[in-house]
Length: 447
Ligand code: GLN
Image (cartoon, rainbow, N blue to C red; front, side):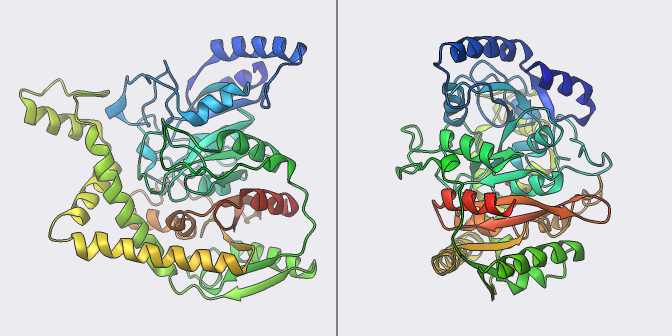
């Protein structure tokens, strides 16, 4: 804990942590030392973990990096975090992110931007940018992020660490401040596959507080990392031939496919004609869900209330106008539009239908193949400000991550070399629903 607290201090300018629980972390460490000496310590004894600023942690502020939740103190602890504490993990602090998880560069945060530790003029990715940099820069062993459309995998790729998004419903969402409830997942950043698997197996599993959480048994992922079989791997022509793809990423991805072939695995090219529909489907459905989820922030129940209000109507208006940032407002407007009576069928219903087609395609493919491989992102970490004026260019960063989110299947990003500027490249591996154990074992083989 002392080691990490020192690192957090010397690297404070990276702005990864928005709050550090130094005192309680040191106390917890002492108690755990005692437990260890008595042979009574939990599975995660002494593991130092940072949590994204969207997870409730009783008695601590949690504000989704939004001004509208400034000063909001959690009344309870999210299930994911509680399960880590139950196994003697040490929660060292709260990590910066894009407001309500909306963004791909961590530039949309009320706490300011997070710097990529490898090149401080570049973004760390988003929305879980703080969580990625915390692991990248050795500010904690493991961190929690959330992945709605790529927010764990994309920043993992940009910072050169491992980032895992589990199957939708594998980890309880109780206590997670919602962005888009039918997409939101809680994921893990780490430097090793084993740490990642261990934390995931502790968090996963049914929770009576989240009726959508799966009742399927959870395997001991961290004990199932041995891999020696021959597998079937698919890759898409449309991703490798995409004009948006940075050439060095294509080269590095092809190198992995060649290596797998050489090692006796079956590697096959498959067409994915639906690729161009994945992003529009994702952004129509997530903005719709966000506009509904965020309607609860009205100045009455949580956080900020505008001091300039003079009646009920103006309290709603001013609180929301002053409290939400630009990107969040844009999404609330988009979501309200696609849900409005005259456009509901043309956009929302249609997007739901397309989602089903993409999900069916993905699941069927993953019945025939063990894994699907593609780059995590079309580019490596870009410079601050490069996409800020152009939301569509920013949304394009999610081109390869949203398929797994729309389909609900698990996906991981693994470091796969660097580009000519020395920025890390991410390799994405996708498996069928609830195949976390298989995904971790294959990742262990690939890294
Ligand atoms: N960049 C995507 C978005 O802005 C993903 C966000 C996420 O996964 N939370 O919606």
